[in-house]
Length: 560
Image (cartoon, rainbow, N blue to C red; front, side, top):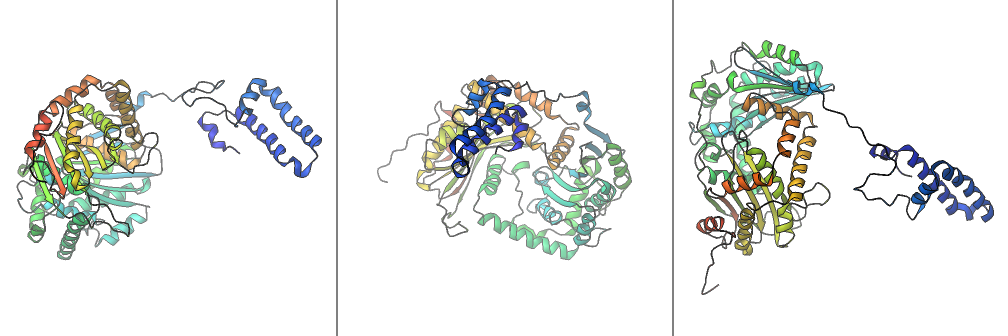
């Protein structure tokens, strides 16, 4: 029988009851020869179907009883006789959802209330690998990330990480720490009634880490393992992301590596860590964000645990902060590597060469950020074995123009990395090493075709998919927390989802063409990993991106 949940999808109870009565009649026909004589069966069927025809009409009866049990109506057309749905309207209170308060020491407190008995609270710090210009060949941020990511370290209040976890378990809580090139984030999800304990724990973890010698040594082991795992991982995307940033911003800001080099692991000690934290872990560079709690409660906890607290490293000196602006350089980073033995199971993975080509886009503070986001969604892409279906991007350009036409390509995916002063839009592709040159030419042609006029249906599909993805992600409490924290940390305010949807809806085909034309004027950044025997030169890639059709310069060989 048809599940009752479908009633919530627009099927009214009347149609449901009609179909149910018709199915009862069908069941009688199927079972009649077993229990009753034919005249008696027909009499029973008439008793069931006659009330249905009297109640719903002969037209509805014929429509629902013809062939299958469902009306023959297109999915794009509304069902006849169904009342028009009434959707909830956005009230005026949504403009006040995210509340922001700045304390006397410069710390920002941002919150958004959300129904439920659990909350997500955390501290975001404007600190990342891009700020390590003054710490050459050490990369302190990665080392400190390994400290806190291992479920936090011992603090002045908690003797070990086990005590921290036991404290959180009393409130059904979990903790996490993540770092990126420009942000470090500490977060805890727990019951609302444990807010005081959570903020106290966060303050202790951020401002009072003990950094014991045994913890530093364990972290050195974790860094070595992480670096070894990075080189052995079948998925090359994290390594390629490192390489493309190094090529695009050679030796500066976001081009600095996120992962500490092996030779620098032993150079990092407690003194160096304190020196780094003293410069960047100051209240002016922090945001305490929370979702699922009252703003007044969060502000009270912030005043109690974060207002007049002296860090373990002493007074902060934000004058030593590196304020360098990202300088896009372009270039190429190559890594010849044997990719024939990366399979982790009995089924071998084909040997592939991975190429990533990127061009400078814009920062997330600029107005062109939204058109670039739509362009990235319009390019889309994925793997050759991605599952299809509505909303899976099967009508994006990299699927239609690349994966569907060139069976030998295993992957073609678009990425957009954006920071406060720069951005990078790139395409990652992988194929057999013997077809690298042809693969690179396909990518350069796709970049050139971006500057053409986007079709109306193509553009609307990309905008709809982007808005759908945005709203779906913001249904999750931890995602809302990260969105609130990152926006307030970067801009001091937060754009609400409906504002972003309005900006997305206003993007036109001329906007896409304008930002693409501007992007194509920059030098390409190229990352290449695997067997690079057939890899074209950087000069040829640059010439292809400067041409009208995106074709690589022809090469003539006497011998192959």
